Image (cartoon, one colour):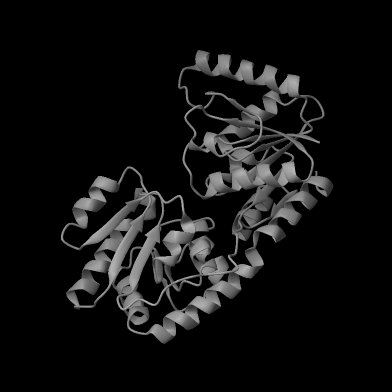
Length: 332
């Protein structure tokens, strides 16, 4: 089949990772894939499929949107797709207006306002709560497909005398790294011996560096080599205010890292409500207390790490690939 895969995000986060993997899965199965990305997308350097760039969502001007929309419409007509997949709700209404006759449409729901995707033929949701929301809105052709990770076969984490706490995310307000840093302040005041690495970039970086002044926190920037990063830390912490899934947490778990995370939808679905080291949103004392428990016990770190690794087996990349291909072949 001929399949168009559309993403209007410009970064390199979890959604973009799913977009790239989806493209690879479809190509490996013999489908002809055409990607649509904005011209400033960082993904452009990582995609091996034919790609066109378009600014239709970047313009506020109605006239410019119409021009870009007309251009994209003509390109789709030339390609003659059987299926169009969008990873952005804002594109859903637009796709329905430009999709060629008999072309099926799929909305990949990573979170946000699911109502924008309701008009598409099929919805793929990354958590079960989103599936329920879609069904409550009358969309019955909705499928649960959680995000996935490449589970490493060999993990080479050296034994360290001084444990390292790490986090990895876009540095935005909704990721709430401010709570993480305040928890680190409490641990430092308790005279615990540890190091901290914050991986990622984003608009809050200057504010976070100012907040972290004097705490000896290493801001390592956006990480390309995730294996090297996850093997360089001993505990993973995520204090997001909202995570539909939480791909960074799952990646850390795949590397046998114990995790201290907030009670987001994604974390609760993956870890279960009874996981001891789930913290209320914004609860600095709880984050600090849970980190301290794990810092003080290498035995606990090791046992939790093995438990986390076992959980990730149900989210491995090969299983997700097969399920996605089954969806494409049978559900639309």
